[in-house]
Length: 313
Image (cartoon, rainbow, N blue to C red):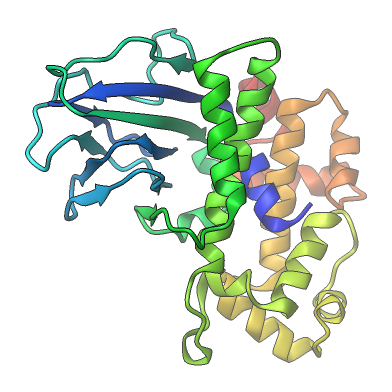
């Protein structure tokens, strides 16, 4: 597993939600602020305005993609001074409803110009949010343009088709397509960040730094390996001291601190999703002693692994 794939696989919890919605002007839809969630909006047809609660309005056109990694509240509307014509949408709404909605009837408005949106939301486990996601800005806007890589638009089209015309296998296809869409959004955003030698810091720089990326991939590929700073430096092709300094500068913590965090994050996922005995989970994240693993897990998650498993279920 590479770092970006693991970020999506490990941090998401519960069932993602998505909807294919058509609006006719005048319209306005509020999306509540929900810390611990992430959402995206894609304009499939027409145009609209995104109105953040604490930033300037953003004009969106057909093909534009917006990602909000921290669950910040916002409004989508046909104008910068919108009427809010629908109840606020919350990705953590406890009321049961179809997680994959397709709007087959025009909503609200007076028959004005149409806007078709593809919306999606993830619930994230705050205790396991990867620092890569924490480092992102409140709003990522990827405007449509001919030079943009085609995999993003392909994922959008496939997801829209599944939501518009559900069929056999839709329940399996939609979560996979949502994950793919999120990966493409993050990949494109990181690839398009400017990289200057005098300002190399943060995950955008880390994922574009071959030595640090090699070490990160080694940790994610085999968290149970007996990694040391020297062994990770060898993976990176650097000597020990320059590697440790470079890794800490870009990632924000020393190599072995990140290794421990990732092992405990992986262990939490295994405890929630498998019935493996604690000794097996311990071995899978690099601990030969169940006692040492339990102590390390409790320091990170503030609860013993057995208690964590029971509460998670």
